[in-house]
Amino acid sequence: MEIFPGITLDAMETEIPIIELKPKKGCPYGEVIFMGDFHVGSGHFSERQYLEYVKWIKENPTVKVVLMGDYVEMGSLSRYGASEKQLASIQLMEIVRLLKPIKNRIIVFLEGNHEERFWRATKGTESLTEIVAAKLGISPLMPGPERGQLFVIRIKYKNLVQNYPVYAIHGSTSAVIRKETQLKKIFENLRASLIAHAHIHQIFKDHKTFYAVRKLNDKFYLTCHEQHWLTTGCFVKNLGYAEKKSLPITKIGAPIVRFYYDKEGIEIIDDPRITYNIGIKTDTKAGGLSLQELRRITGVGEPKYDLDKVVREFGRGFKWKERNLS
Image (cartoon, rainbow, N blue to C red):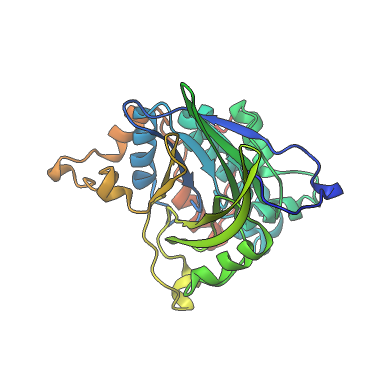
């Protein structure tokens, strides 16, 4: 696909990475799940719901994962000063434990504003995402603090191939009521097949249609293009500041995007509970799995400490010391 005219920018001459996506067995599409805003350490993170998604990812080996930021809370950075060194490392080890079962599926690893707290506290010398990636032994695309990632999803089957430019960013906005406002701002700066934005804690999808000129077989045609917009949900109940400001209630989950190889088409599954039956049967009486069973099945392992208890103790000024964190 070619859209005219255009000028190459010096800052953008770096080749855009291509990620090969395999089709799901028996389906004309491949799948990417966009997960973020866990806020581990806040006391409101829903590990059970998160593990429901991990279970589904492990059951579907062609699925790729884009991590959208705000994996940890790091709330004590501005309140507890030097004590944060202890609490931060606990949260870091928790996110490593949680991501380990899906580490080889992660293709993009964004930083959120809560990871940036760690970056600022270390005067820009330490990146939490780089530390986690190193502990996991992976090398996904990591644009760093405050940056988004542009990449191309390529899916092919036999002689059929489609390429989809995707832009993902954690973002910084309070546009929680009219989410399309923030997404439209990105659209004004960049044309891509899909724009994914986190931070808002809600799953929302929309699209924008526009005309462009396209070259097909050495001839030029006026063509209709579609850009999909997506905000990527969360795995945390309403945080205290959100309740204080009467912000919209969050619905835990993560959207799944289908990229088709037999047509130029993207399909966003914004409620995987309905389409994939993820996270519905949480009650063991209704056939759901307990948290311990989910940990065993997904291979996340048991935590070495009660993170919620640690957070509460820090809130009361309790001087907690790390133990058994090797």
